Image 1 (tube, helix red, strand yellow):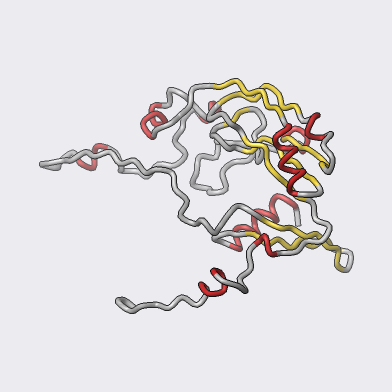
Image 2 (cartoon, rainbow, N blue to C red; image 1 turned 135 degrees about the vertical axis):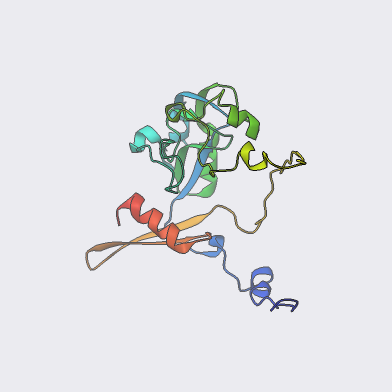
Length: 223
């Protein structure tokens, strides 16, 4: 295989016609969800006013973490710092621009987006953690109860590794934000059915691990 051109079989359908994306799935009678996201990199949520959004025609409901009684959960990866608890919708603190703080459910996508724009969140901004060095200093903690910004550490990666080297070179690298998968937006379609008296969920979503996606839904929904 090395040095040999591998002809991709999936490209013609995905790039011309015949490929299926989430938006191609027809979900009759489905509701549409859109998320209200934080414009602040780090801050405390003082209040979230959803009354205007709830009154928009076509909006079925507007929900915050408090409305859904969401529990704070540790990271999915067991090797990560389990003290860094957070809810799926930010409940008291936002930690990055774009973090979801509420969800609007509506009869159409347009109504859901209108609802998102009508939600008002009062967020008291705190100092942001922008660089790796800022994070390592722990001067500003994104998870105060954890007491650190370090979520995972590889033993032996400190200065002692280079202690006996005759020459060491230090360089700083900055990777800019980028989208390596432009054809993989965050989207999903879910369908509930009752079959022989048992609740079944079918979900279509982009992912890089179908089994992990399934396990997360099972844990969250109790199915």
